[in-house]
Each structure stands twice: as C-alpha cells, then as structure tokens.
Amino acid sequence: MTNYVIVGAGAAGLYTAYRLLNGGTLNAGDTVRLFEWSDRPGGRICTYTFPASVYPPGTSPNGLYCEFGGMRFATDANFPNPAKIVEGHVLVQQTIIALNLQGKVVPFQESTNRMYYLRGRNVYETTITSLGGLPYNFNSEFGQFVTNNKVPTPYTADNLLGAIAGLFAPGLGSANAQRSAWCSYYANGTVTSGAATPSFPANTPVRDMGYWNLLYDQFGDEGFDYTADGTGYTSNVINWNSADAMQANNDYGSTSQYMRLDGGYSILFEALANQITALAANYPGSGIFYNQRLVSLEESKTDNTTTCNFVRHGGRESSFSTEHADVLFLAMPRRALEMIAEESPAYMLNTSAMKYFLESSIDQPAIKAVLVFDQAWWTSPSCTYPPNLVAPYNAPPNTPTSQWVGGATITDLPLRMVYYFANNIPCGPGAKGGPYVMLASYDDMNYSGFWREVELSGDYSTAPSQIRQPLTGPTSVPVDSAFAGLLLKQLAEVHGIAAENVPAPTAVYYQDWGQDPFGGGYHGWASHYNICQVMDSIRAPYQKILNNSARQTYIIGSCYSFDQAWVEGALCVAESVLQDFVGLPPLNPHIGNYTLICKV
Image 1 (cartoon, rainbow, N blue to C red):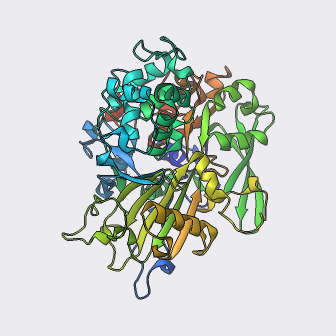
Image 2 (tube, rainbow, N blue to C red; image 1 turned 45 degrees about the horizontal axis):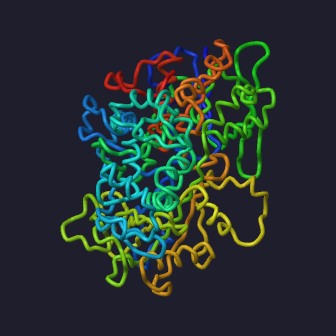
C-alpha cells in the first residue's frame, strides 16, 4: 500500500492527483491525498463572480466575473483536434479536451490598436512608425540598432524585444516545436559575433548575462526605459537570465492564439477537483482536504517515508495532524518551499545543495485591481481610448460599444496595464445597463509596492509578514478609499479626462500575489544558472541532487519550469515527474514527442 501525498491544490497538484487516480497504476489500498491551505482549488487561478451588491438597482445578477489570477492560454490553430495540437500550451489544451471543456473555449479579446500613455503623452500602436514620435531621448546607437536589425514597424517594445531575440538567438522561433532547441540554447547559447560588444564579447554564455544589463548595452538608457515602459510587464526586463528572456519575450514564428474559458479559468480547476473527488471513491482515504496548512517536514528515521505536519484551520479553532507520505509531491513555488524550510531545520530543503537550486528562481510580485462601474465611461467620445476594441466573442449583431471589450492599454504610471472586460459574463454580453468590469491595474515587480501601502487604512493589526491575502481571494476595499482614489486619478490621466468626470465605481477589489505563501504572481530564472540542470534536477531532489534514490519526494509547479508564467509550466513539470519517476504513461499518445521540460 502506497500513500501518495500532494501538498498544494494549484494547477500542478490538481493535475497530479487526477492523473494518479485516473492513470490505471494504483493498487488496492493505495491512497492519493491532496492537501490545500485555502478553501478552494486553483492556486493562482482565481475567477471571482461578483455578488448582487455590485449590480445597478432593478437588475439581477447575471454571472459577471473577473479573473484575479491567470486568465488566458495559448492554443493551436487545430484545437480541439488532440492529434494535431503542437503549438501553444499543449498540455492545457489536452487537459481541457480530456475534461470535455472544449466547448467553453473562446477568444481572449485584445485591442487591435493598443493605446499607450507614456511620459504624459498618448500614442496609438499603429502610429509608432517613427522613433521621433515617442517621448524619449533615444541615442544614435539605438537608432542604428533599429535600422541594422530591420525592426518591423510599429516600433513597439514587443517588436524591439523580438529583434533582440533575433540577434542573440538567431534561427529560433517561439513555436513549441522548437522547445528542445530552446533547451539547448539555455545550456549552450553564446553571444554571436553580430551581437558582440566590448561589455559582452563573442562567445559569452548568454545565461550568464543579466537581461537589464544586455538591453542597456544594446539600447542605451532611454531605449531601455522605453522597452520597460512599453511592454506593461516590468518583470520582462529585470536582470534575469537572458537566455530565458530571449524565449519568453519572443513571439515571432508563433501561430498560436490566446483563448480563455467562457465563465472563467477556474472552471478547469473545479472540473479537476470534481474528477478527483469522484475517482477518490475507488480508493478509500483518498480525496482533497482543504484548510490544511503544511507547517513542517521530517525525514523518517525508520523508513523512507516523509512525515508531514499539518495545521487545520476551521473557524476559531485549529488542530494538528500528521501524514506519513511514501511518495510526496510539493506543488508549491519557491517562497512556499522556503516557508516550510524555516520550520524544518533538519529537512533537505535546508542543505546547501538545495539552496543553490531553490534560489535559481526569482519571485515576481504581481497585483490586480478591479473596478466595477454602472456605465462603460471609457467608450465616451470625450475620452482618449483604444478605437479598435472588439465586440464580445458571441455578441449579437449591432452590440453597443458599451459592451465592447479589449486591452491592454499600457502606461508608465503605476497602473501599468488596463483591460476593458465590460459585460464579461458566460454566453455573451450582459443585461443592458451594466455593470461593466475594468481590470484597472495589472502590474508587477516594484509597481506592486505602490498599491500595497493603500491596501489597508490605518495601522497594521498584524505583522505584515503574516498577511496571507491571496489565500482568501480578492479583497474588497471602500469605493472612497485611498486605493480607489489613486486608481481613478490615474485612469483619468491615461484617458485624457478630468478626474471628476470618471464616475464613482460600485465596487473595488484587489489581489496581491506578492504576499505569502506565493511570493509572486509568476517567476523567472536567475542569471548564472544552467536552466536545464536546475529544471531537470529540482523536480526530483533526492534522486537528482542528494544521491538518495530511495526517498520519493518531488517538487512540481510552474516555478521551476519551461513556462514559468503559465499554467502550462505547472502541468509540464507534473507530467514529467509522473512519467519519469512514477511510471505513468503519457496523458495521451499525442503528447509523446512534446518537450515537457529541459533536461541535462
């Protein structure tokens, strides 16, 4: 009898439990037990359906929702034909098909002519055909880079980063068919003669270069500032591993399209949880156990099991429990692992070898702030707004512009990115009269700190390090709070109207993924690491790092994956462990040639 213990009911943990229970390899008496600190499945996928209080008087709730965590995935043009899916997020697509959710997949709308508000000036994407039209003092070296590398117009930050990838990783596109080639580049890529500079001469390993260092060297300070401002994601241009940055910021060669699940991304993870519950009936003792915090881990002195010490939270009462795991899956990111290590001084996470591998990943804090309005004021002719928003996927003809959706508007203000979700309800636009949803701020890294100081008013009631906001779901703040006031002030500036002309919202929410236990909304690889070595080894630390093949403990999740900012990364690491160490066959025959992770 084998007791499989999985800690963390995010994407990796749910997928692992589902595959174990449905894989046909369990024996009578085996158990699969999944423990989750919060009271819901999904981890950093958090679809929130708004309560009746946000609706205008006289209207009824219609399922209006917003994504406070991950919100989209990339698909192959051949979706939903499982035999032909090679592009995009392959395992996400195959899992959606396996759970019969393909009918819920609809396009993720984005503006066809994004608006930028940079250094106090509005610029539309299609008009960026000259560097002189941007409010930056670019040096001549930057202009030469644009000319010499034939950067396509418009000269967006995205296209500039694509040109950098073309220069430093020639011949490599972002298609999933080239994942194995990117793995080779992570390990062996060097600066070519055409990209060499006195700072980074030819043959310098690209993995040993900080991306901020590289961009400054190629673009100058103002050129770097533009790429930092113009992508919307500060995490794209921090001093992370340049080899990984080439792939992550490179979209040329890809034919995939971003999609979403109509009704919210959480549908996928609720479906996985439901499947786990149903399949668990075949293996008594199995199931999902919520409100269970893993506090510490201990290696058994008598056998190769691991003792897991949990605290159960229920109302005002807490109780302690212990689980003995024959096979343990830690489905959690770096910060959560470090929190366990702090309480487990004798556990392997505290060895110098493990610290080396754990610290290869960079936490990237991220925050989302959402406003709900009675009117879609951003479509008013008095506003500066993206002129090419698109109607909802299944909207009837002549849908009024007040129900159009799109994004992102990008700014260097602390808002960073704005998405217009409007009547984002299942099966089409909502009832006339609203309400209307705006993802008013989506930002990361240092900008998230701007909002953290107004997430609460008055003094702290507990130590800041003890705040666990992401576990409780989005937090509502008063519509007259400093948080709301700063959002509205910046929205007015971005859209070119007076602050008093922005109507008062009916609700304001935020979700701060930089708080413990997540430590970030996503992660990046640190410079000076061989990504392939870490990705391959850290998933099976005892076998691969500590030379102990008897203990079966695995680290899974997106944090140490090929796709660190996506659900795909979590599923790929979990699938690789299940195949390589647990002996499960692939999810289906069609993923047999898909590169799940990079290996040494």
